Length: 259
Image (cartoon, rainbow, N blue to C red; front, side, top):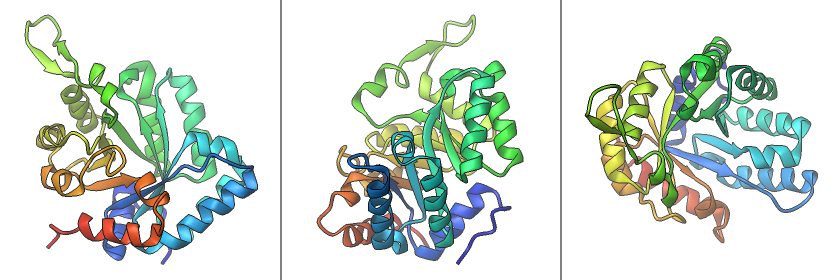
């Protein structure tokens, strides 16, 4: 089943999720080997897992290793299976640089990209949001990453303007995700309480994508109950003895609360 690429990203990934009965986004990060070998590794993983996932996420390190031509070929194969693709770039620079990077990922064929709200709007991410949405690309805002050190930035308390009131940085970023009309918010599955608080801010307008299940200690059941919509899972599937079986088990767990 091929997707209608003219539909908004949120609709396309939801379509895939319902079709495959899965909220799992497979994170394929292959790094050891030459470009051709890495591409074959990615294709092999995809063929084992594709019926149990709704999207595929790549880190920019993998894309840099396999090169633009093989990346485009790989994305076409993924799209041919009715799945969406995400580039995890964590875009965080000035507008001119951000726009150039966004165009490059659009040309490669990615459906969505992660952005870091620390860059701000004016002169930062404003151009990227306009450019991406004009071309049907979704943008996922980092609200709280999954690793322990994320608390140093996303978990800090900051003063709000001239007032003496403080607010957690991640709460501000969650509000920005709504204000900027983001297509998703990334919150680590390792922090269910943060997911719950973020969900209160986002409501139903911005879905939550949670990395960190399994290897980093996050749990699908707790995150799902707290408000996660999609789970980004890499090593717990790709490093499993039988990746297909592992993906199927995660998929089943990810939709347990669905009607």
